Length: 347
Image 1 (cartoon, helix red, strand yellow):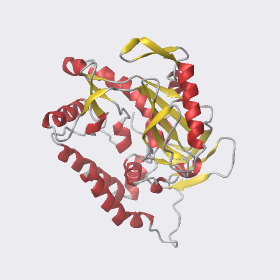
Image 2 (cartoon, helix red, strand yellow; image 1 turned 135 degrees about the vertical axis):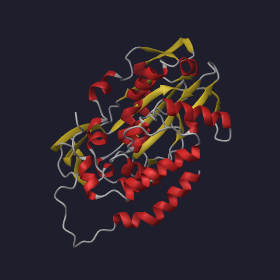
Image 3 (cartoon, rainbow, N blue to C red; image 1 turned 90 degrees about the vertical axis):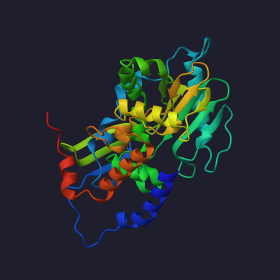
Image 4 (tube, rainbow, N blue to C red; image 1 turned 120 degrees about the vertical axis):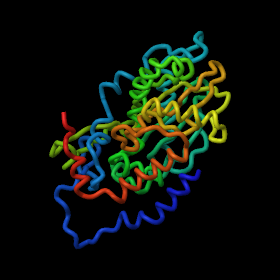
């Protein structure tokens, strides 16, 4: 809560400054730029900003991995009930039906036929973009629905406070892009945890798959003056979902519990901040009595960490570190620094 209040006041103070630019200043021909449009159509939307970087825009979406990790077209057993299952095609049809319901409304949606809405604060019903978190009423699965459009992709300044700061810290990253890191990151983190006997016996993750619903179109992104290439392009799905096991929690870890704070920070230190240490990402599962991490996006990509960040012994220290990086990236990085960021890394 404290960090959100601080972000609010920073936004009020500095957003006018971020937009402020003299109309008489000549445009920098080397400034990074993206053009975003529906695949096969013209009239792209454009964004020019020194913060745009190659990795978040052109390297996070791996189409081969995306296709490989789709919901399997076979029976999927339930996490803690291996004798029960649902066919992957049934789940896909239910998801597509829910998306039809979502796209049919331009106002606040209170109920879906087959899913309970767990979170909708990050979804804009008028623009029909953002993130919705749903839970199946019949099967033990949670679905995160990501929806984006070209016009909103290039507008990071009207999606709330946190997306603005992550845009500056993460080189132009947004929630739609960071979602593509969630499944691949689980594999990397699991490999490291498996090497540590203590964490191996204590930590677990839900299974996760992608769903690519029929309603999805493809968005084309063209970058100029970004990275080592003069011009580069990629394509990403406008709508995709992450389907995960629903976790029956005995409790969620709490900042008011010193042991919980210590556990979460120690684990994230061990994982070199690959996982966000936000305390509500950690749940004690009833059936297994293991700590299950439910939010698995690659946090280093979200906040633009490079190199060793050290270790953190308190959440106060952790939040101050994030606030310092946010301030540095947003207000105190020079044009020369930005241009150095576009250079290829030494081999």
